[in-house]
Image (cartoon, one colour):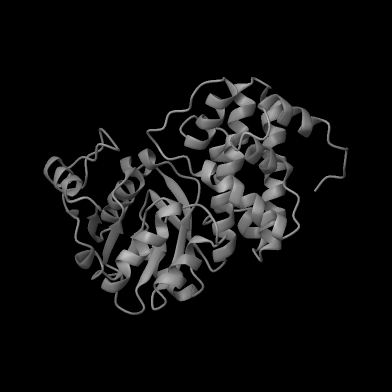
Length: 326
């Protein structure tokens, strides 16, 4: 039996609910913790989350709004939006025993501080052990138990292996890594690049353009990752290239769909969070700090910020000087 048998999921959105089902399938004792007691009560009674309709919550999962109860488990998955993660970690901190692994399941960079998600955990919960889970996955697939592979990274390889053993199952396949920064950069940057891919698809620029956009976006991701100390093999793995390919090609991707709507002149739906919209300006600020050129991400940030029209952004990218591959 795993030493991390008791798992809490803090954040009862669609992704948190999906991960609760995945952890339950792995044989864990799971607490799904919602911020709002009314939401916790609804999910507990109906065994269904309105944010993930049609998906039955495993009968063995306890639903609660009590952070003190969630903090008593052997590991915590922190599943909140990236820009809300600091607040959630601060609320959780008093309830955690020293050395508790806190596995961040958000993809982004904090506005203002330019800090990655595990750095926020270190700031707010210095006695915890930060980890990150990221990779090519959709909440509905994970919730249903469809085959999915992700990456789980923490600096202690022994701990990373133990957490993978605790959470992994036949259909939820986490691979362990010690390259925390590489996993974080892949997850954050791909959201911005997926918006660009959605714009290409929405403007019907063709499959060749979408392929070019994806590969050039990956080159940008690799440059930034290496500049931030990530290992190239991590960026080329599940949490980098794998996540990018999925997000740049599927209507299930919220960021991709957001880009499609923008390209068509439609108002994107606001019922679901689009992390790439929040990450884009921060990603560009970080790239500038590192002297890394990211023209595709720059174009997305300019469009989202109203500094450039989509047509002008496309023209600017297509008229850039020719250069060597890489």
